[in-house]
Length: 77
Length: 77
Image (tube, rainbow over all chains, first blue to last red; front, side):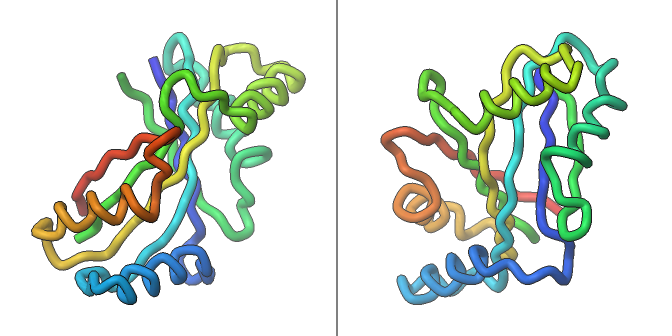
């Protein structure tokens, strides 16, 4: 199965990449969006969901910067 | 509501960042993972899901590189 870790900037933290994409969309004539935030995710192939606690540690120490980013973990597939 | 566009490398395309994370996890003693793939996502604030066709164009032309990446679009929240 797959564990998915989603990492994104906390609300309130400026996201220049997202802002650039929003500006580009508007310049291209797409005006349906009011905000764009960018994030990253990790698809991790695992045997079962018993690794959740370990994944939390990995997310905090390696995948996300907990000062400015938040993460969530999902299991699926 | 939010449109979410997930972009990841196609299967078969090498993912050095994912491989580095996998190696680091193993070096730290976490051996439950057999593969790590990294991707990015975009949370786009929209009024409704009528923008799906436009989003497809934006994903193809701006958010993903269709030669090596694939994308999926979800609406939620």
